[in-house]
Length: 60
Image 1 (cartoon, rainbow, N blue to C red):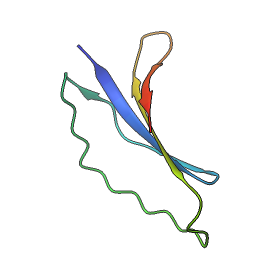
Image 2 (cartoon, rainbow, N blue to C red; image 1 turned 30 degrees about the horizontal axis):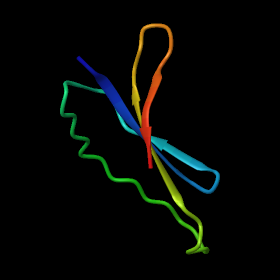
Image 3 (cartoon, rainbow, N blue to C red; image 1 turned 120 degrees about the vertical axis):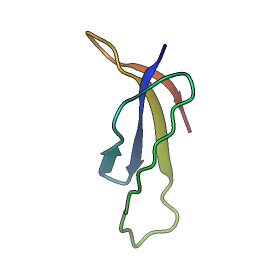
Image 4 (cartoon, rainbow, N blue to C red; image 1 turned 135 degrees about the vertical axis):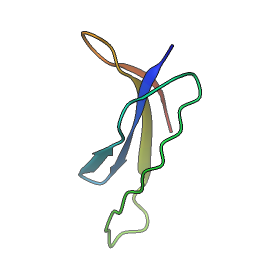
């Protein structure tokens, strides 16, 4: 069973969701980022929370 969370990064700003248990997590959270550059990409990472360390599952 997973205990996963998402990390959203844009430029030098990083926001993290709360960890959600289960195989099909759903995060009902909104994030607001301000930027004046539309060519900067956004990075989305999905992590599994571990006892000693967290494991990166996938990134987009």
